[in-house]
Structure formats: C-alpha cells, structure tokens
Amino acid sequence: MTHLPDSFYPIASSADEVAQAVKAGACFIQLRAKTEDKNFVRHEVRKALEVSRVYQACLVVNDHWEIALDEGAPYIHLGQEDLLSADYKAIHRQGVKLGVSTHDHHELSSAQKVDPHYIALGPVWETTLKVMPWQPQGLKRVREWASLIAPIPLVAIGGVTTERSLSCLKAGAEAVAVVSDVFRHTASIEQRVKAWQEALRDSCSC
Image (cartoon, rainbow, N blue to C red; front, top):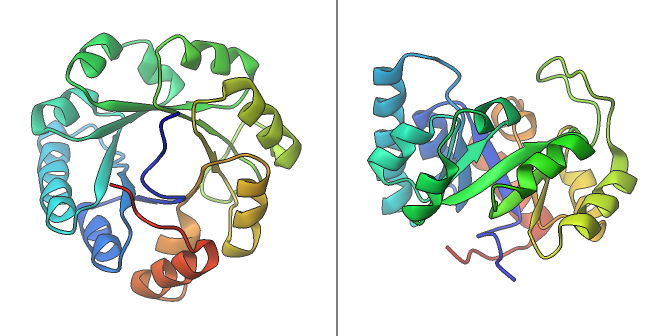
C-alpha cells in the first residue's frame, strides 16, 4: 500500500501561502491557483516548488497539469472536469503522483480508471468556501469510500476542523484537506499549522 506524506493536507491559493505554511512545518500541501493566466500560474508554481524543496515539502499542483509536468511537481490533483482533458498517461509516465476529486459513485468510477495515487471525497461537512451542488457526505460516506477504494489512500475534504479531523481518520481517511481553517482563520497561518500538527500528531514521510 502506498501512503501519503502526511495526514495534514492544507490547500493554499498562492505561492506566498504555500511558503508560510511549509516554513511553519506543513510537509504535504496543494497549490490551487484559480486563474486561467498561464504565465501567472507558472510563476506561482515555480515559487511554490522552490520553497517546498527548500523545506522538504511535497507540493501538489491543482488542475494545471501541463505546467506541473513542465516544472517538475511531484503531485498533481485533478477535478472531474479536468479528467476529460488531462493526459493522465503522460502524468504517470513522468512518475508524478495523481490525486482526483470525487463526490458520488459515478465520479468515483471515473477516478478509479485513471490509476490515482489518492482519491479525495467531499464535502464531508457543509462548507462556506464555495457553493457546492452536493449535500454533505458525512462520516458514513467516508467509511464507505475508504472500503471501496482500499488500498488507495482517501483524503477527506470540506468543513474539516481540528476538532473533526480525527473522526475522519478513524472513519478511514488517510489525510484531511483543509482550506478555511488554515488560510481564512483569524489566527496566523503559522499558528494554524502548529495547531493542526498538534491535533493530528502525524509525521512527515516526504
């Protein structure tokens, strides 16, 4: 069975957020740059990869798989729409690890066909980050997904807090992905990373 680098998986929206998080100790982090400006994305990916390498963290690049391959990112994460256009065979040929988002059984079936390194399920709880067409999945669905995809690691995302995180891991998730509770919290990013590490008490294996 393959394992993820850590059970704490923050999702940043910029290279600066990546830098703050990895300097605080995060070792498995995603850069989700929501823009179609390819030059800007490439600049952000390069910056995020540079700081991640210095601090020995694994960077996951969301969506922009061609740039991720060009720049040598170790992980790529794709949503369901991106699966339709991404060359996942090229991703695998280059030795890049692939994560895929899922929200229902149909999407799970699509994800399993591309030989992912991990599968994400969400939202586990209601999230205010963006409008979601899916109802909260709940821990019952986390347990179901973990059983269906084993031995592929499961990532739980959506409404996860430090207080809820261990219940996700006990239900079968190997990692919890976090956005708001790190990057939109009233406390600093460094404080939130430390709080999450204390809550999960997990070690890096990057």
